[in-house]
Length: 233
Image 1: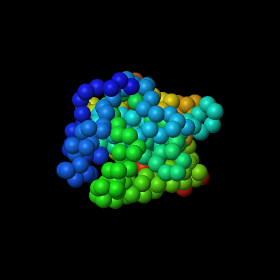
Image 2 (image 1 turned 60 degrees about the vertical axis):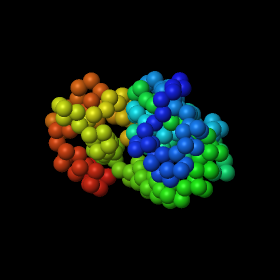
Image 3 (image 1 turned 30 degrees about the vertical axis):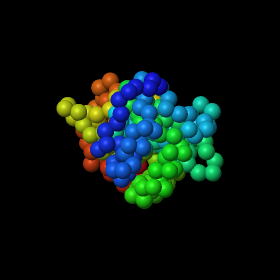
Image 4 (image 1 turned 60 degrees about the horizontal axis):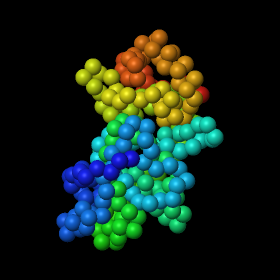
């Protein structure tokens, strides 16, 4: 990561947009802005927590070790999102890693200052509590899907979720260049299984592929896989 002089915008910064105006000068003094290249880590699982990060541009994947050689992607952080907050608590280590999937810019504040911000700004505290609750619900849903949903349904669900979060480009492809390995990690499966299912979906006309992008040709079919009983899909 390389520190740069530019600061984040008040309208898009998770922290700035949720604090009272009188607190903004303190944020301006305490924050640092970093630029990352694709593939660079913001922080790694198991590292001591130094502070909290806010995404100003680019795409950051949040991921966790599955076993010695595998990982699972829990979410993608975009403009205005917070990362590093899972390190808050009595055991101040990051339980996940965060890695840039593209050139990205993040804003950083130290842990002590962030805790002070929570005490001074009740709106920030309430919003963070709601964010934690929503993230917990999404995590539980992901674990349920991995336990009860067939791999084909999970991959179909991945395509639908990526479309919802990233939208479409001008040609109708999901607007993110995501490697097949990252797709597999987000689906909770292996690269080999993902490759097989993508070929199956492509051969039957359910999706199209171009380099790293996916075009959903038959969305109702993918939705039906997600809704069906796992044993039947």
